[in-house]
Image 1 (cartoon, rainbow, N blue to C red):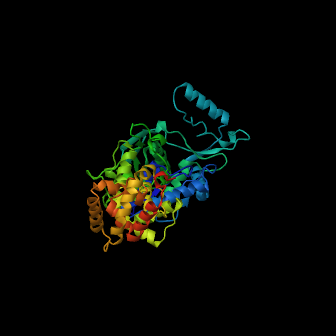
Image 2: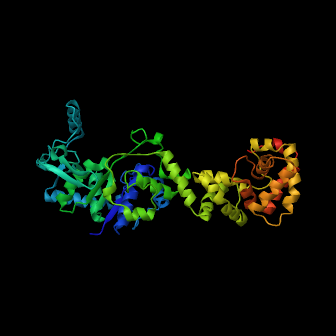
Image 3: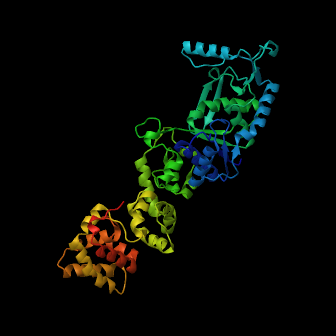
Length: 475
């Protein structure tokens, strides 16, 4: 049997963390088994299913690298097929028309509430003749559910789950306006798409029992189910925005890498020994449903951030520059080929200090700022008249440098400090401030090497020629 999985989000909001993990597990299971991964947009709630919400899902899936093997299926386009199946079930006796009035349903609901139980339809139209139907009531079509025994689900995560059929009433398949309900649409679409494995959150476990009954009534093969425990916050409560449960697009905006998100989401409820850092290739090779735990996992933003720092260090320098360039350009910095090459050269010193692309872009900014560069308050205070005089004394030796590399530059600066009977920091700290506009940066001699001979001298000349540098402030 060729494995077919699917991710079926409702486009009524952002692609949240739980949905992204479900998509990842379906994608990995299909890739591990050389199967197919499909995407279905369950857009039957037309009031809330907007084009913008659909695009957010598609963009989030693309950013995560979870590409489907076929174009997305839109559930609303299959409504005629859903209606056809409902009517076929009426013809076979597995469904019937229900003419309950709204008042009758309200009375059932109130009685259930008074008795402290959940509302279950009482089946009053299961065996009644439609000729008894009240005038002016458009019927719904209800499934004739089995009333005795149990429905058994052999779940790949939860194990064997037994649900008494007395707890499952005759669900509505077609509303009175002729539109299909979620429960029917999901079963028909999964069958028609050839889905073999339904992997989703365990909040759908009862739905699985109802859907199993529909599959059996139609004589269709029931797919394998795997219901994933939900994700909680660090405090053990249901995951919410206060825990950092934002849309996938928000994590992209916060500067996280898709590789990080895939690795982190994989470890939210799935394990492979003690491995924490798991590449996508390894994830595909190792992933199986047996590794999914039964207990809820806990979302930890700090752990996600630390993992992102690892992936930043592992990412190619040119690729990182490509990723941060839009951030720098959005900040008003124009990047030419020279700037890009300078940033690539700077990455080995910058990326070990960053945890997100936002951090990295902020740290890289000084390398590509146009002259004269602005200064932070602390940096400006370092550039008093004495410091500027020491830099002026250093300039001739730097101008004469025949080789522009870290060891040579360091030797020149140390020699000048010794000549002036200064500790190295008394010269190095103002130099850093003049070259970066800050008091914190990668190593000074690394910075000077990356900036290059010409840019270093020009920035130092800008500082020493500006009599008001000590009061200059960065916006």
